[in-house]
Image 1 (tube, rainbow, N blue to C red):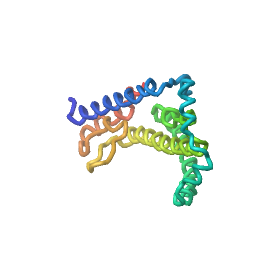
Image 2 (tube, rainbow, N blue to C red):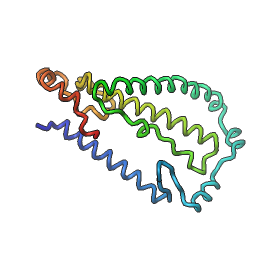
Image 3 (spheres, helix red, strand yellow):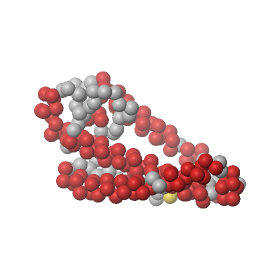
Image 4 (cartoon, rainbow, N blue to C red):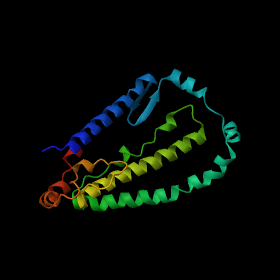
Amino acid sequence: MTTQLEILLDKIKVLETELIEELQKQEEEFSYEIRKRRVYFEENVIVRHKEYVKRLFNYITDAPLKHILSAPFVWICIIPSLLMDVTISLYQAVCFPLYGIPKVNRQDYIVFDRQYLHYLNLIEKINCAYCSYANGLLAYLQEIAARTEQFWCPIKHAKRIKTLHSRYQKFFSYGDAQKYRSQVDSVRHDFKDLE
């Protein structure tokens, strides 16, 4: 029997898919296309974009002092990010095959494409790559954690949580001991929707 919660979660998934499709329509509006993971703009668009590049000297001299002084604190985060990336990727490579959990495709989450924007200067492109990496890494980590949680502890929380991860709708209701014990093995291996 489908619960109201499952119906709502299915609606959210449909809306997320529609949102992604709507975002993809920007390809036409801004005259670009994606071929083999590379973004191609029409030549006239590239020329127009280059008119908007802020020269490096102006970019640095116009930057507020607080931004310049805080930059090392932003960039020091790359060290734990790289360690987390290596650790979580190693965990997935070793453990997911043992548990029968489908692996998370890193390229679906960590996307580098802003280097194709001709209106960004070198510093902006580096900063964009860093943000793409950090946010993509966290999304990649969340998906690995979600699949792990589905395998080890597929139980919804009693307390309200801010966001739901991709596997949450598969989880058992909090307090439903009978259903948990009778169906936990099937839920642990229910990744058919990822195939």
